[in-house]
Length: 357
Image (cartoon, rainbow, N blue to C red; front, side, top):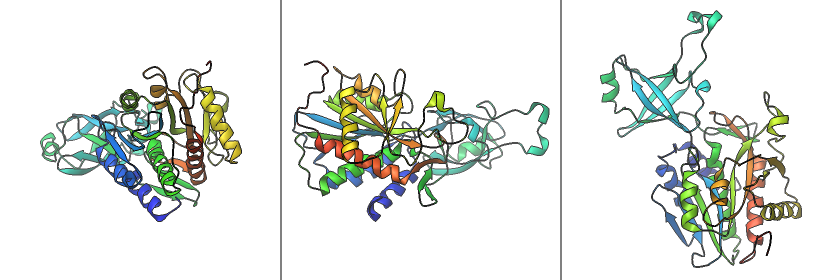
């Protein structure tokens, strides 16, 4: 957060709800911020936004993040006016009880809460944990008809009512840092390129993709449209230094030690080595992360699109993923921006990443 402008954008963008499939309000905020720094933009059918520099250039480089956040859908309304939900993406049922929610109706936001029976009345011998079968939302209504009059119906989207905050002046905490913190970072990279008057010899496509949380769908669609030569993706990865993580199975990644670069079949080794050399040259701290089959991020969609795209993933470590208190280091945030920026500006026009030429 180098400037007040950057900070204001970060808080406005993160505090806005952007559920999977309903990202347009957040996309408008993002596009308005990057418009002064681009030559053109693409807005596709499902809402992915791409800021473009040098749109006429034949060689195309992508930097990408995803714009959507996990949420809930109203699935059933009881005659007593209680609401049951299903997931939209990987929402965590265990954190739901006692959370405040925003229910997004055509009439506007309706406030609600995930209720839960008091400790005094629960049977300790066979206490039931939260599940999709028993978590419910209370909107202060006493009947199904009253709920429906509020504009709530099956399919209405629900998000947690939590906003961004700072912790000990070192961390950012809030819901949906996964992965709108990535949208912030690629916007800052673009801004830095423009303000430093870097004349790129290729087309730069800054992609803020929709619908990652339900299967990388936005990235899949836009990758086929752009057909880039190189893609550098940014997303979040688990900080495994917090309690209850197993480093033997999940790796050793910590907030505050720099972004993580990934080893995985979808990650092109020549692109990965280029990024590592850039980090070492510019003294940017970084960590290493391995995945056995796929990254589970938009990297996979870009890598295997069209005839294959040389792709790599740079992740920012994140504590408590898919909760309302996702936490990242402000130092990591800047280091990730710097690593993507320094990598992009040294890419050569028509750079060939093939293993065998």
